Image 1: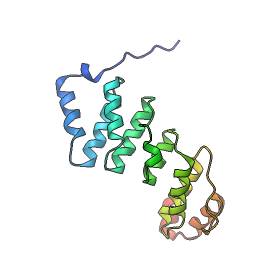
Image 2: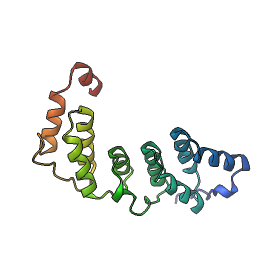
Image 3: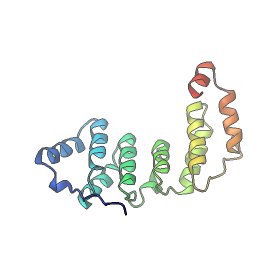
Length: 168
């Protein structure tokens, strides 16, 4: 049998650690709040899970991604209704990578918007969202590519030498 690690509560952490987490959680810079999410992932108590859920609703999309990944590592779900309302495709991608359930219509809306963009980065993110979805939504027929394979072909053929080199 596998030995189970002891539970680690934030309340049992040294006072300096608890104060540091609080300062980071309320930091003005998004990177400080993201570090708070990483530090909170170390604990497995309800209090730290609630703090992570709070960070999953942060104003910065980057902090939301760190918090969702930390919640997943802890085996905790994303806050109720969070992913139904999320519009930032990078957060949706992080949620899918972390195995949080993301509504198909949310993925479809983001993928449609990104696939229609002139930016290759946006098109690539659209492809990632569609392919990472448990039930991949169809790309809109109005876009230049209605299937993931066509979108990938569009992306590759529009790359310049530097972009192709980065991809390879």
